[in-house]
Image (cartoon, rainbow, N blue to C red):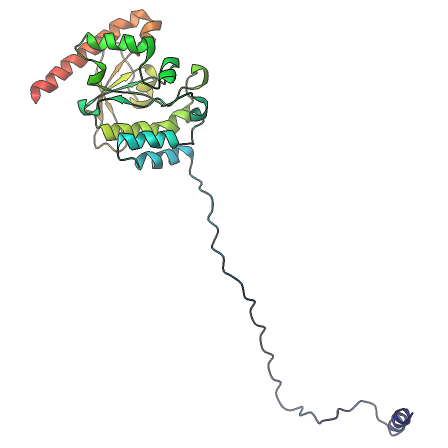
Length: 256
């Protein structure tokens, strides 16, 4: 009641605002407020965006890292950028002696090659051996490889994308084996590696440009063994190419 009586007295005396217990210096500048302390946090490593390289670009990188044919075979076997690897029963890699300086590139693997894992197997391989023997050569005198290392499902022709993914491995194989001559056995190897050149009735050496090689490698086009089995009349063309090969090899030997 005393506090209420005191309040009534202050109102009667004309008080219209509350007063603080201690005087306030209105002329002193205000003290700036302290900024809030930054929240402590553990820095995180910047996120690494996923690789945007295409399968063909990845193939170039994987093939380029191989310094030997054995390393290249392992790179091909471990490459997951081509769906043919998952559908094929086996990998078909190069076979033979790279020191001979003669490389034979054939069509994509067939059923016999897929089953055995070796290039130019089965009836086509037997025919090839007879063809080579006619000019004094054997399988051991060449390095043999298919255009691509896996057989497409059902033996269908490989797509352009599948060839593009596999091609860097073939290019690297050529660079590592460093052949003096290349035989392109089949229309597809000629089309892929021969560039604008086309297989002709009269055999002739063409330049095969390979990334990583300083100069084009002399290449000779001829029908594949599988084509000869389907079309016996093409054997005359194959025989002409084999005779040119024999003359060229003899000339190379004479010049050494």
